[in-house]
Amino acid sequence: MKVVKQSGHYVDFDREKLRKSMIRSGADAALVDNVVQKISASIYDGISTRKIYKLAFSLLKKESSSHAARYNLKGALQMLGPAGFFFEKFIARLFESQGYQTEVNCFLQGTCVTHEIDVVAQKNEITAMIECKFHATPAAVTDVKVPMYILSRFNDIKPLPHKLMGQHQNITTCILVTNSRFTSDALAFGTCCGLTLLSWDYPKHENIRHLIDRERLYPITCLTTLTAVEKEKVLIQGIILVSDLPDQSFILEAIGLSPQRIKNVLQEIRELTKTKLTI
View 1: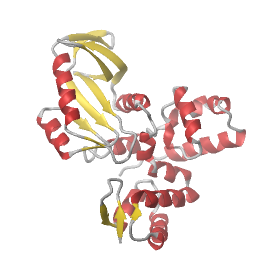
View 2: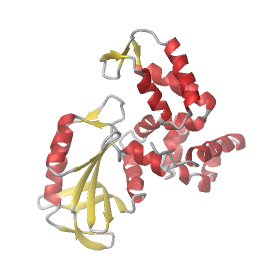
View 3: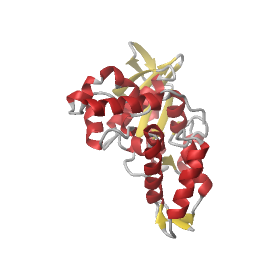
View 4: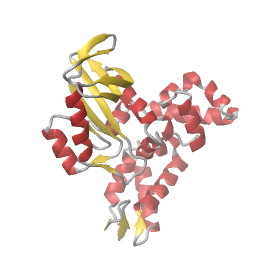
């Protein structure tokens, strides 16, 4: 059975890959096996991976909103757009969970020109400039031209001290983050030149997906009990993570949710954040 990927390429339908993606959502083996069986009986030659994903999401949501929310995590990151400003704030929170102090959207004077830096993060002897490459479409990848460009900016900035976190210090390292994937050339160039790379699936055990699940830092956009319009309204109010919302649930009333819907949203958040996943 052949399926069509987002890139347009045809590949064999992989039951085990589908199964693993749902296990990562926190669903138990019995539920996953049941969903895989239903999907296997419904697909046809030439079906798109997008349709398979939608079917899996729908079946998971019938059993548990929190499982569906985790399963939709990559799509949720793509909703932190359209320009990626909310993604930058999300990445700042991700680094804060690792013990960094952060500043967002900093202007730093380089040797040649002034640069706007998405995030600056500081911990111990490390002061990092973090550049975020945001993609709003699932098939997009970050190619080698991006780390080449970021390296040139880093080289212009690092010779000079900058007032950051209340003190003058030099940028010591450069981190390139994307919500999608790096091409093999981008990984090779970035690694060779000493850039730190972070993507949806790279590095293998410390990538964005693993960090989110491990620290339970789920973006508000993954919630299944809010519409896309409602998620945008919540983001505009400065709420980036689902864990921020219970203490500011008055925002849900302010954007027009009924008491019952507010209850449903808060219940989904409790289910989503109550257990750290170690996958």
